[in-house]
Image 1 (cartoon, rainbow, N blue to C red):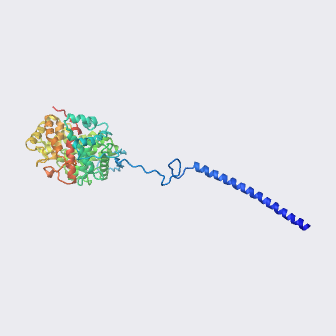
Image 2: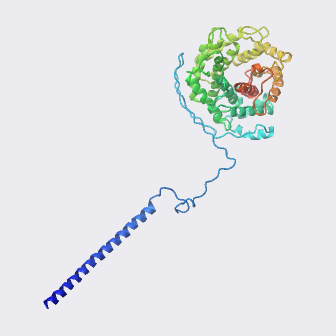
Image 3: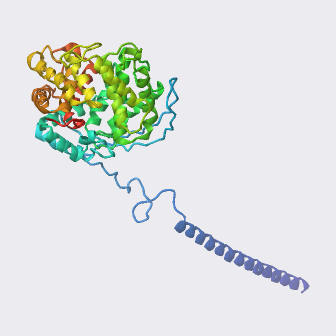
Length: 483
């Protein structure tokens, strides 16, 4: 009996233990279920609130390679943007007495791309293709002196009409500028020898057409040219020559490159170039000889009119900047005394002494008219140039007597002088220079190959002189009223 009772008690205790265990199990089960539900809610909340590592496309669905949309294709006629990020080099004071200035930084606004132009197309199609170029002309130009007013939009149209420029000549200018753009070196310069002079001449062509760093067609070209001049010039302490030395060719390079830099500042007011321009002009001022002229290497010996002509043009460009650079105006006054010393009996000008030399007489007349020259005192010389051209040196591109250097100066001198002299010269040179252009926009070797031989720099030299001649109609307005 006790054994049964003991057995029953044992069974009851086991049942009670199982019942207790089941209660613990149920409690544990409920607790785990609650935890699972809470954790699920947290995960769901994070999934709806936290952003994923990428943005899915298609109504929030996870993007898979198959579900991603195909990349948009560029339009077939899209032109890839050409970028150019200029840097401002540091300018150190050179060894000569330079005016103390503070340079500031100015970032160029560069055109995104150039417009493709087919240079071999006919005149009508070329005009249509280059029609958008006019949109950028004059942008960035402010406060131009009156003599440079023909470089901007409406001013150019009026100057072309007034000075009797033909449409074909302007198209020749456009072709020439496009050739220069396509043949610019990667570093922004032009040519293979005397690169500073070639770059200065090419740059003058774009500036003469009113092109700046903001121009639609030539913004990148202009920006790269400025950068090369800045980098090269600052490296050589304001000596704007290819190698930093003012040697015989360096004398020309200094004048030509400074001329271009001066025009650029006048058109853009880009403060980045002020310090370098002052240094470059001061080299010219201090290189002037006792007689008022300039000689090779600026060695202070009696002046050479060919070298002096470029320095006078550079100084005049410096004057037009309005920066009032010390010594510039005084050097120009002194240079006029030098011109009087090399004036010939017929009103022409000589190389290093008084004579009538056809290739240099235009230099003397142009430089005189550029700076306080009296038209009446130059009438005899201008008449001698016109008579000599008519009888001895016809403006024929393929003639053995062809002289692009003389024509560059004669063209400007005739326009500045005006009257019958300009009418005659315009009839002689405009059609001849326009017709001589190559289909690619450059100009070939003339009949006098010794003046501009073949070769990379020779091609640039001939092309730039011809462009500058054809831009004469609007590049500089006459300083004297025609009779």
